[in-house]
Image (cartoon, rainbow, N blue to C red; front, side, top):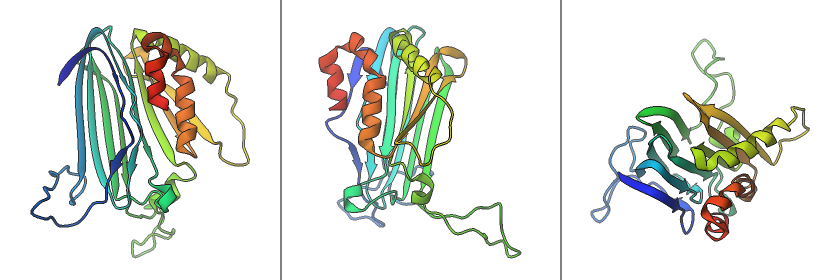
Length: 247
């Protein structure tokens, strides 16, 4: 756990999760059990505390899981009243250039936000690469009557999904602009899925926090949307620092 005043966090490249290999070698130490898979799993944990008046801007590149990879992520953010945070968590379908699209074994990501010790937001994503049918329609033997659906069947046509958590006085301008954009959105039928879809909702117990969810057909589509949506952060962290998050 660490306390920060103002911190901007990004990465030099996407988080790449390599293929899970059954068994183990003497030179390789298997990851501890996570309760989500019996195979060795790549694990990442982050626990951050932010004092009043402090801020954390966590804007990493997306997680990309290789074929048969298993990934488990748990992130906890503890904010004092008056602290600010922009927390981006996103992932891609895989290495599409290599023909790998939604073919990883398992992806689990949990994000929790506490304000003054009270949990205001909890977002969990669990994607299982094992195909399954619909439990609602079965025959007399208990077998599914519908064809088995793969993860790709469920996630397409989108190849990138993002969750954005916004909280605190330093992001009020960003929230205000997103609310204005949402008010202009009209609900209508479309002939085919849009390139980018997004939604925004409040967090439990505090009207100032927001959760934004984005889906895009291409990772670059989502990155471009995020870059525009968070442009108001330039006034807080400066253009040079901000540009590093979306190069």
